[in-house]
Image 1 (tube, protein in one colour):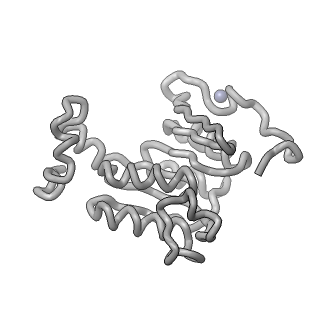
Image 2 (cartoon, rainbow, N blue to C red):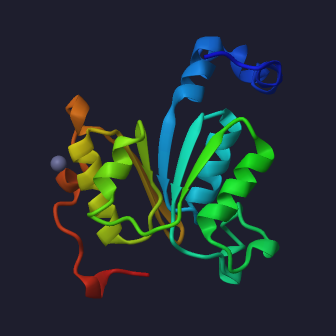
Length: 187
Ligand SMILES: [Zn+2]
């Protein structure tokens, strides 16, 4: 795999960093990241992954863009109202960097499709907004042995962690063994 002349110019600030360099940039180009959620966390995540040159970015989200999303879900614009979020995010990423591949999965993540989907990627990034999905993602990442970057927010608090049980670390269930009862879950 090689970088085009346009890519060499585009990523020149990466290429001059000893921690990245040409070898690192090619690794980013070969990398496949699956993002779950194209909302408040997925918008900045996807935009940075795409701009940085992650070669293949999968986006799974079944929701559509609503006006109440626009103040924080910065990948979506007024013209995207009513459109699938995964599709809208894809356009935003490609507008900034057409060198990356964005695979849209306009569907709900379920126990029936999770394992097969996760197998196609190197890293799973969880930006989902409910506990049912969060535990499903943990379990599917565990069984497919994929590192899981897990992020969540509530009002003014945020949590971010990497779970990689395949390398001997804990998983999400090691930290939170049980989902909270439905009556205690904030929206
Ligand atoms: Zn565990």
